[in-house]
Amino acid sequence: MESGVLKYGIIGVGMMGREHLVNLYHLRTEGVAVVAFADPHIPSQQLALQLAHSFTWPIKVFSGHQELLDSGLCDVLVVATPNMTHHRILMDIINHSKPHHVLVEKPLCTTVSHCKEVVDAARKRPDILVQVGLEYRYMPPVAKLLEIVKGGNLGRIRMVSIREHRFPFLVKVNNWNRFNINSGGTLVEKCCHFFDLMRLFVGANPVRVMASGAIDVNHKDEIYDGKVPDIIDNAYVIVEFDNGSRGMLDLCMFAEGSKNEQEISVVGDIGKGEAFVPESVVRFGTREGRNDIQTIKAKDQRIKYAGLHHGSSYLEHLNFLSAIRGKGEKAPSVDLQDGLVSVAMGVAAQLSIEYGRFVSIDEVMNELRV
Ligand SMILES: NC(=O)c1ccc[n+]([C@@H]2O[C@H](COP(=O)([O-])OP(=O)(O)OC[C@H]3O[C@@H](n4cnc5c(N)ncnc54)[C@H](O)[C@@H]3O)[C@@H](O)[C@H]2O)c1
Image 1: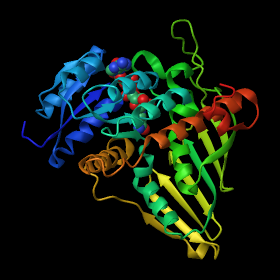
Image 2: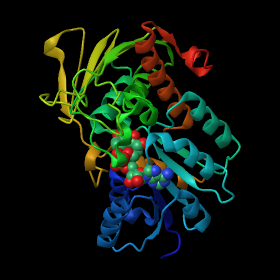
Image 3: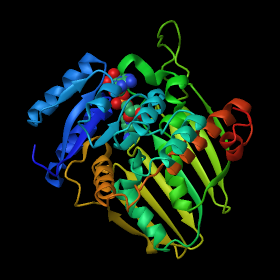
């Protein structure tokens, strides 16, 4: 392999790990190559190997992450294993004698205490960059709306409302995503993306969270080892931020009859903006009224592979690469603190449903009740 090439390893080559593999292939001209995988599941290994062979990338396959780490083959690792495994794998990577930069899929971990352990361990390894896979911020319409907000065109943002109406959770290897204990719960597992976006749009941190949700339609006729799934399939979540702004999430996972999967509305004191995914449309206007509204189609010419997430995985890798090439001078654009807070908001929302009351972020950060 030519020198100067950054060697990547992928830990977990299920659906998302293979998605990373294809994205990295489209980044090969940037001087990256995948050289190793670790995954104990033979069908996942085989599917990933087929892809790698079609890219003519020679790959070393391991059944566990420790062997991959000890091989010393990689400079950068992508962790795309089930959520409940992120903590152990990250701790082993961070504590390994060889430094490996790491992009870990969301959620950072399934509990606040595990996230905090990772944050503390990483603090002692300034030679390692850790980026968290909160990639929705890179989706072109979302990025465009963020740019409009940051440009001050809407004034001070007071309300952010995010609607995700989509299909149910997909089937995963060994059905890990059917149970809260493995995924962290729906509001951690997938909604960490939206809590991260809310923080970006309002430019503030969350104070307290109130949620209502249940498992009402999906997975009720499924049984795994004698147990019925416990993951909620719909919820409303209200978040209050420390600058007085408010966020609201409207999640429904039996809403295939929806034109867009995500609809984001951001309202400031002088204007309103909206983003629609996958339509990739952004609209914004002022309080002058409807005649003043602009509609644009959001595109990012840098995207060479759109994949499953409208190009956001490609841009996330591009960003991480530039942080790595900045040789530590540049921090990853989605850091461990972003990963931790987005999990804390999800945990607070899950607990709010259970307790039937507002749950403060302090409570979950200090684990007063968890
Ligand atoms: N960014 C996004 O929007 C997005 C989308 C989908 C999934 N994800 C995340 O990606 C991760 C993987 O999800 P997926 O959909 O690919 O699941 P998956 O079930 O399709 O794949 C997981 C793979 O990890 C392997 N694995 C399990 N334990 C392992 C271990 N200890 N070491 C190595 N491999 C191990 C499994 O055998 C499987 O092949 C999850 O954290 C999920 O939340 C993120």
